[in-house]
Image 1 (cartoon, one colour):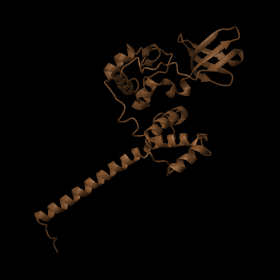
Image 2 (tube, helix red, strand yellow; image 1 turned 60 degrees about the vertical axis):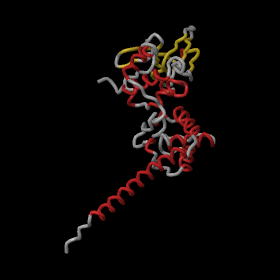
Image 3 (cartoon, one colour; image 1 turned 90 degrees about the vertical axis):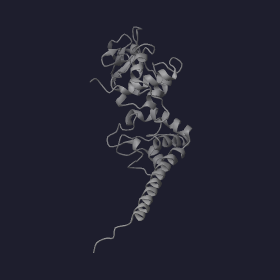
Image 4 (cartoon, helix red, strand yellow; image 1 turned 180 degrees about the vertical axis):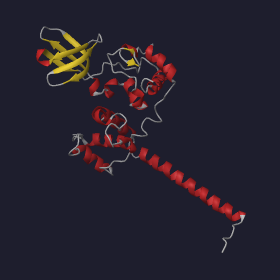
Length: 268
């Protein structure tokens, strides 16, 4: 038996109903995202970002994807479904893995959970990104960044090579590095100060270290290997050698530098 063909009025009603349903679904999805962002205090999200950079980024990476099969920015966690689960996981660690327990107090736990829940959106709408070509000029001239950093074979080796920084850092992380380098320094990039038995002081960025020796690149870009038993003093410097650009560069210049750094994906 053939199906009846609906008249135009009936077809219009069906289309209108489908349109209303689609709009409602879209609005619900947008509301869900808004609810997620407003569930946590902005100050907690900001604070959690700083804690994450200092305590978590060394293993998980600044974008949350440094551990195989773990993507913290996805907002989905295989071992935790609720905020309480996340707090417990962070506090107790994960047995049989490299994830250690952390002794955060309750406010700190709330901050790191708030940041993890908002990691994907955090900074995506608040960080101004300018123009990469202008940013390169600021980076090399006014910012004097190449006196410490190297990009695609150009610049100094004193600081970390930034040739592929855009593939491993978000705009938010880069902005924080420019404004407050001490809040975002990675352990692998710390500088050390050593004093030999004869009184010679050596300072530079640590490249490798074991129980007996340490290799650094000093402030003259020389590779230096030191035997710890031959040192009178050895100190890992906890503050960043990089200055803050909060006052050195204006907001537009910082935005351009961020755009330039994001464009660096490695030598082509």
